[in-house]
Image 1 (cartoon, helix red, strand yellow):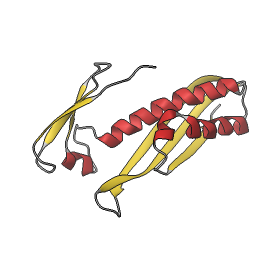
Image 2 (cartoon, helix red, strand yellow):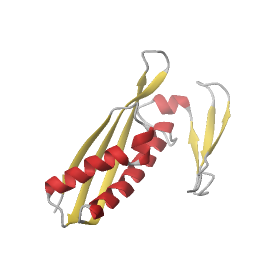
Image 3 (tube, helix red, strand yellow):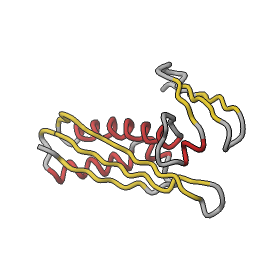
Length: 146
């Protein structure tokens, strides 16, 4: 399996500095980052480590879930997955991820609601990004749509 690479160039201190994160392997983009925008309610055109984790988690989860739906005898028609990653203070000092909320809505042939939810839970437990984030509480809201 391949290794993927991202790179960040940072200038200045935490509060007055800024940087750019580059998705080096895919070459699909370079994105601005700054701590004040990371800690603000409005991102102001900059991404953050939490948004990048959310993107990675939602994509990984969707792939794993589609595989598990097929293993359970279903055929995924469409899956809409979002991941909300929260940053907050760490009691030990600094900051930490305080939670990840996965939400999935899907149209699937050949599975009932119980089968869909079972595969959804298994995907949450087995996608590689979920496994990497075991120190963070991950919640799941899954619903089958017709």
